[in-house]
Length: 389
Ligand SMILES: *Cc1c(COP(=O)(O)O)cnc(C)c1O
Image (cartoon, rainbow, N blue to C red):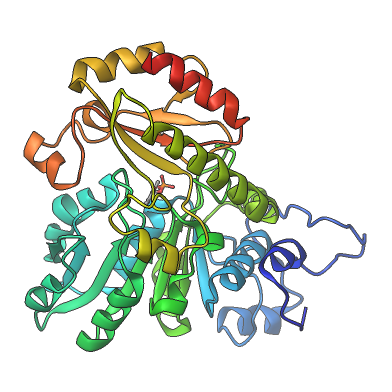
């Protein structure tokens, strides 16, 4: 495909070359290795004189199709696909950093990413500092000669805060840092950080990209020279995405735009309903005017995403009662699924944090996070309404 098409068209029409069978939809290449024509072909392939598949730990046609699609969606030069979002996060940092290097990250990051920074990277003498999400100028004071990477997510989990990606891009440029954005909450359909100054973008494909709660996956896309380092590290250490999951994901991306449009439409309606409700203290959703970063969200996102956070009046007890009364929605830990999912961060994902630590990332005892799915919005609202009652 030479000509550049619109997002939806690329999502559907980016596909592998047809085989001799002239299939309409891309086939599944479940193969661990690929054959060589002769001794010279084998030598040249291993010497990387040829751009071809050798072994599925390095590359596979189904992964390549998935990567090419995400690169087009994000406006990226190159990418590598991983078995999970965390494999993408770990391998990207590990490929780019040396012992002694320093990371500056937003304080509100995915729980496992936080654990990686605090429990594992110190083993290799890689340190980090956190900045408050609403104080980007703190970054100036945190930079050291060893700082290599500036890292953030937006919107954040579970607080649904929004960071100004353009400002982060300027900060990274000013201090010559590699800006990496975890774009999983927005998906490439709502927000493209590379256009705002990011060098690399990471996704957990497990969330909106698959969108149906079936497979784990991750991907890193961005500047070709950085991706080459990520590729060289990963082809040796082996966190690659399976061809089967890549095939599933590439199909899922065909419907990303229509799915995410409906997720966002439903989420905004639910947020507006909750904002009026007498048993709700506050509601946070990027496209509600009451959101502290409403203007930034409007500037950098096409719509508000699938996650709504709110607080039930009456603290932990009222929260528990509310959860026990839920009938339709799933009590689960995933997000971006076609099924609406409700979680209680204080007693589950963030239960190991102290009350003060939870407060620092915006979680109170009554905080609820809903990943709004694709069921009919009237049924979603009816379930939450009866549970609040
Ligand atoms: C889920 C998630 C991850 C990790 O992805 P997995 O596929 O579960 O490994 C990373 N970042 C964010 C923001 C996530 O929501």
